[in-house]
Length: 141
Length: 122
Image 1 (cartoon, rainbow over the protein chains, first blue to last red):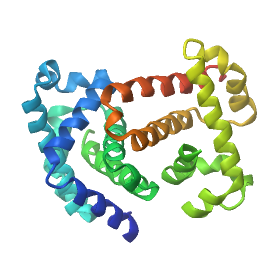
Image 2: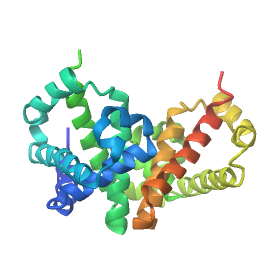
Image 3: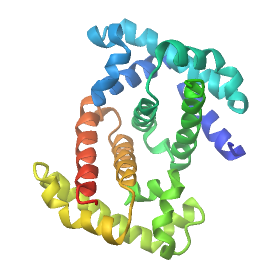
Image 4: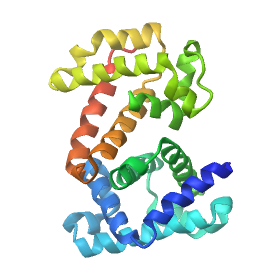
């Protein structure tokens, strides 16, 4: 359950990302592959050549989904249902990987927002992204 | 010190080890708490020792590992959480200079510290 203050923090940060989904998403993926090489296995075409255009394209897609989650913070299950199906039936990313992605997401936010990245923002986004990860892995079994 | 404060706020269940620290009821209470400040300093000094002894972490942290297991009963998962928070704080401070490669290097060090601190657990 997100408090009103947490919701405000989440929206505030998203407003800074909106419009730059591709750039943030590409950096997120690049960090993920660099820091946690084992995650590359889930993105074979993407991680092999690390073509900038492909990273931007896939990054855009991932961050757009995060944006959708922000729009539907109170009803993640319904909003992310197709993505949850995709992860359960097709992608089957081991749930242990989501905290790795979340850590990289926090680092992206921290390095871009710097002094503006307050502890309240970090806490709210960690809670929110963890909630998203729970929904995405809920249908696994 | 900032990392330790962030740990207690972002992952409030980590406060379970600090019942005798007094007021931890809000982010500002935690930030102003003198025991938090003192302990944060101790913890960050230890990370400094880690940087100086990167090839010898298990030996460097052997005594601390025993302490955290036998006396403090801290779940090693908490060491990983603190390491991640420390990396976020570094990212915040260094901004663009905190490239993926730099992040990878620091994540390796903090992971090494966490492993070293858990090494003597039984």
